[in-house]
Amino acid sequence: MKTVIVGAGNVATHIAKTLAAHNCAPVQIWSRHADTAAVLAREVGSKAVARFEDIDTDADVYIISVADQALEGVIKDLCRCCKQGVFVHTAGTMSMDLFEGECNHYGVLYP
Image 1 (cartoon, one colour):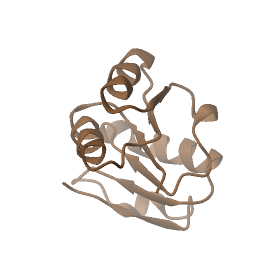
Image 2 (image 1 turned 135 degrees about the horizontal axis):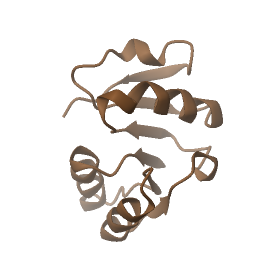
Image 3 (image 1 turned 30 degrees about the vertical axis):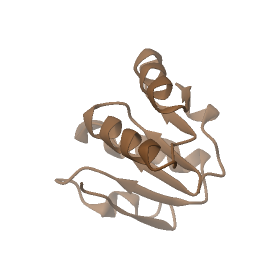
Image 4 (image 1 turned 180 degrees about the vertical axis):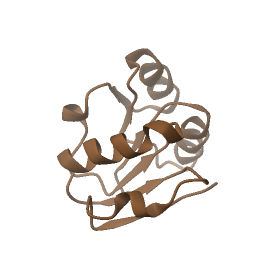
């Protein structure tokens, strides 16, 4: 299964490390800050990307773990370039309805 993690903060780091520990390292880590994506990607054996245009468009799962105030914009931008797969966000205070009309398969992964 190909997973892309969108975000490189605390929750994204824990998810990426857990996936890597189970031989399911994400194929890419995206962050608006290239350096933070690069640090996490090195730790888990993934590729860092800093532009949505560079995100793997045929991943099976996209885990979006960004700040609540950035979530809606990131979902719109990501779903514009990646049309297939399952999209989940990790924000416990935000509705999964943010995905409605943007992609077909979505949910919330609240660790």
